[in-house]
Structures are given as C-alpha cells and as structure tokens.
Image 1 (cartoon, rainbow, N blue to C red):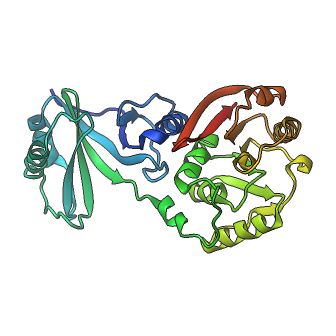
Image 2 (image 1 turned 30 degrees about the horizontal axis):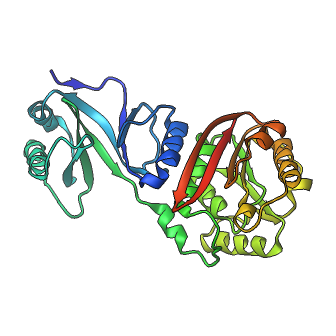
Length: 312
C-alpha cells in the first residue's frame, strides 16, 4: 500500500573518500543527530543540500510504497503548472543496474502530467529505492559551492582544504541561529570563508600580520566581511559559543607542551565548547585545559593524519 508521507521527511545521499570517512560521519552526525547508513541517511530536518561537502543530494519525500508501480500510480496528482520536469532514480544500496534505474525513471515519468526535459528541467524529482521500499519526492542537488573557494588569491601549503574546512565549520556550528564562533588562529582564513558562506557568525584572529593580510584578501575576494584582526590567542578576550582551534604549528615544528597547554587554556577562556584540529596526541593537554572531549574524527592524506576533536 502506498502512503502519502504525513510528516515531512528527507533522504540525503552522501559520498566521501576512504581517507575522509571518519570526518564525513562526524559531520553528518553533528548536522542531523543520527548515525548515517552506508551512502544515505533519513531525517526530519531540512538542511540545505549544498551545506555539507559530502552530501550529494536531498529528496523531500512526497510518497512512499512497496513498488515502483505504486509510486507511478500516484505521481499523476502532482501539479506542475506548466513546468518541465525530470526524474532521477537513486539506488543507495546498489541493488539495481543501470538499465533498471533508467526503466524506473521512464515508468514514473510517463505518469507525470507534464513535459519531460532532460537537460534543463524546471523541476527535479528523485525516486529512491531503499531495501524493499520506494520513496519519491522533490530532488535537490548539492551545488559544491566550496569548490569555488579554491580559487582564492592567497594560499598556504599547510592550510586545510576547503572541503575539510567546511566540514569542520559544520561540526562546530551545526545550528547557526544565535551562535557566535571564533577562530583564534585563522591563518589565511580558510575556515572563515567556509563558515561565513554557511551563514555562521564568526570572527578570526591571527598573530601573524601576513596571515591576517592574506585572510582579508581572501574574504574580500569572495565579497565577505573583513571579520579578521591581528591578535595573539593568549591575550584574546571575549565570550563565544564555540572556538575552532587549528594547531598548524605541528606541521613544521613541534610546539613545547607548555606552550600548547597555554593555547588550549586560552581557548577554554573564550568558550567551553571547541573543535580542535591537531596532528599530535594532545588529549591530556585538552583535558588539563578544562575541556571535555565528546567526539572525534580524522582525515588522512597519505601517512599524514589530522585529528578533529570535539569538546562540548
């Protein structure tokens, strides 16, 4: 029996490289509050499909049923009001081959009252098969806006990638309303750019005047506000909801443990919540600084591993 969905639900598909799987799952848990399945998750939350660097698409479920025939029997009720359309079949569990997916798209499309358009449709629909159930609804594709941020005027060899920076911003601030964040060692502003593009209220500081200049150039390039100032984390003051603290110094040299602890204590004075990025083992220092570690993830690049440690 086919049911119209009484409560609005969404299916999100996602993909990531093996090296980023831990970070990907951490980000999705932070955003949606559920553990993702292999390649998809279901949620009552409506989140912009382009927010996460790992989400591929979002389907807002209109109907669900036990067969493609049941879905096809109901789509005739959709009112397109003259808009063209396209149906995309999504097989999250890899149980269909290419021909079966195209057949499903044709079968549903033939029952929609309107004009199909394969190249530039005005409305997209997704048909998703999960196990022995089918789901159908409005389809939204991730526009991969963070890729545009690779084209910034200032680069730094050890900076986070735009994809990783975006995931970290989402982990730190999964719900943006009323949240104030700070990046006290912002470098050239990679996290700042991603956070601002998501709609996060954030400011940045760096002790290095050249880094501050680079961050300002990058922010201006994307027509973002100049939210970065020169400042030493050890002397910063303020009350923030969350700190995003990247400890990049380990890439070139190892910070003495006492200096590391001073930076972590300074971050703790700014906020009781933090996302800390490190290449070294610093759990004991984090706890000595007064943080409670709640979750962690990691991202690999060859033998090089960054840890993303969540303190809430």
